[in-house]
Image (tube, rainbow over all chains, first blue to last red; front, side, top):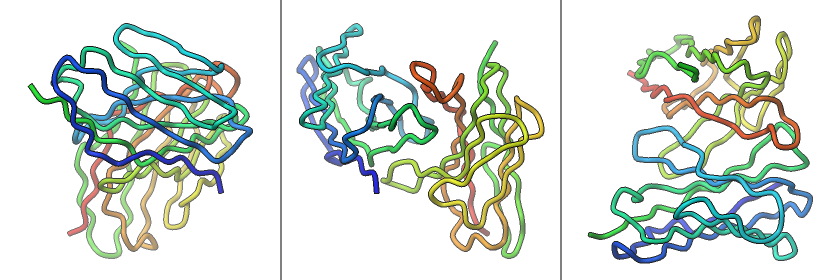
Length: 111
Length: 115
């Protein structure tokens, strides 16, 4: 059974701080990794994807992947109240059809 | 204006009733997916389809059925056999389930409630 785990939170950070969200996965054969943001009552929207070990930056967001340790993280710099949402980690095995989603981490950015 | 549409936004089901949720995409994506999300939980895969006239069961297919007669449409029927259907239903699509093309994009969702 492929599993993806995330700390459910809530994770509270002050405005302007760095928020760090973590995700671990069980399937060592996983190939691609995704972070989605989901506002309450809305559908998930893609933040970024990462395929290779190391860091990938996109604006205020940085995804970090370590396949040896089987974790992927998302850093949000200069956090804003509008970043308050649930962040879902998704893992795809061997570019197959199935994403496995974690339960999500609820982030609260305090003004 | 490309995207994924789902209708209705809210759907009410009576005991023993089958209901159908609509999902349409004009992104020319080959693959389409249906997920269920329960409060405070992640997404669970119900069914997926990689090409027209073909679909596969996901992790929680019991009590659900789908069809894929057109590339742009992937309706989901929640049958009376699904005893706990109250949830947020999300449809997604991807270009193709292959390297670099498997990113899934989501529609706005349908919230199903039981009367």
